[in-house]
Length: 564
Image (cartoon, rainbow, N blue to C red; front, side):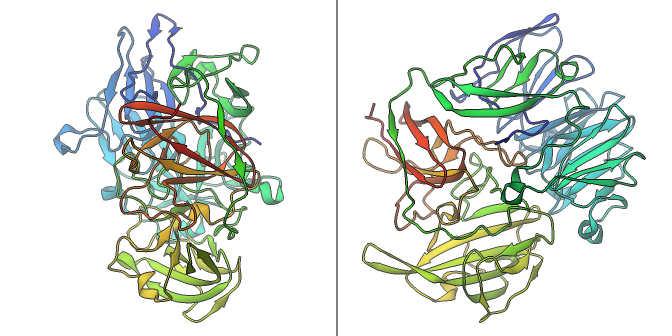
């Protein structure tokens, strides 16, 4: 199963130093003790190395210096800092321009070597264009292309004016002139090939332009039935001089990460990894890689077992963008930047079909929180646990159109709405919630004035995992037997979706509810099978567990500070 796409360099490796021309590459500063998660790596025209990270901003190593300079977001607007610390794209213009792109808050430009930045974020862009594709910024002369989950933004005057490349739905809402049209606005990257062609990669194929993006020819991917969600390898792989490698984790022969490295002409002799920088490998010299926290591998203590739930279907078809947003999963705060999340996200272009996860009756259809077009279903299926009989509901937010009314009966898989960005949203996506409630009162399930519903649970325990993957759930306790809120659990390898990269599991906060069957503190689905060493810090101590994940099963794991 190929999880890597061109452009993302997220593999598991040690932090090490490496020679690069006249420079020595020092290890990246690690303030967390769990390594630095590198999302983007680029060399500037002045030979400076630019590193984009997950939550730690940008690191720059300039020629002739031996130390990394860290650039981070500052709330003080007079500082002219970058807009967001989750950075996974860079681009360089012919007059010293430096562009960066983020996971969830737009992009920015510096014309003074990175001292100050002009940013385009939610205030300038509105509820779209926030998710830049991995390594999705490309410059061609004076023209800059920024590939995002809402289409491609194009400027030839450093952002004074913009044009867009989008699909037919995006063209109806675009505030800037439409420069060209592609079949799907949810793009994964844009490149100029050696042949001079411009290529955009998206869900079901690629689009090729020979006139700088004004007209496009679609090249479809071959159909792969229920595995179509993995068929995303861009057609420009060979022409862009990339090569693939399968990395094996030490002590975990079952876990392999396939990735793509860019040509050394682009990057020099270093590659980005999930934990830092290391020398560029050749296919004949692949080391066994250990995480920096692992040390001795703990014994295998957590094994897969059948789920205690029967699963609902996924709300987005596998032939669309069916991956769960990994940066803002249920209970997540994205490293403390947001309120604890009450559902899961499926980022998709406007108009993508939303499907009922199970059969039942529509109990709500209309505007909900902040005007989000919302539909809710009471399912025929019920849950009996702990001497309680609970009713099951699913709720679908932010739709552009609702196709069912209150009282309508729906079947599993039936289209009930179309994806949009209505209400409090920063991009086109579906927000899904699953509730297990002791009541059929719809006001306890959907209430526009209630930010934290009383009975919602983690949807990742309720919807079927992607084909060939499993689930992990468990608990994290302190020495007093209390749950540890918002703890970060490291060690899982998940590379999809690359547009919202996975870095760590986050335990729930006090406003999230555990599942009435599992009583878990965290849960994550769509995990590739294999053995993993997971680590979390409890009361200043690193606690490790060795687990095994199997397709179609759930692995339960517990962390306590006094265990070995």
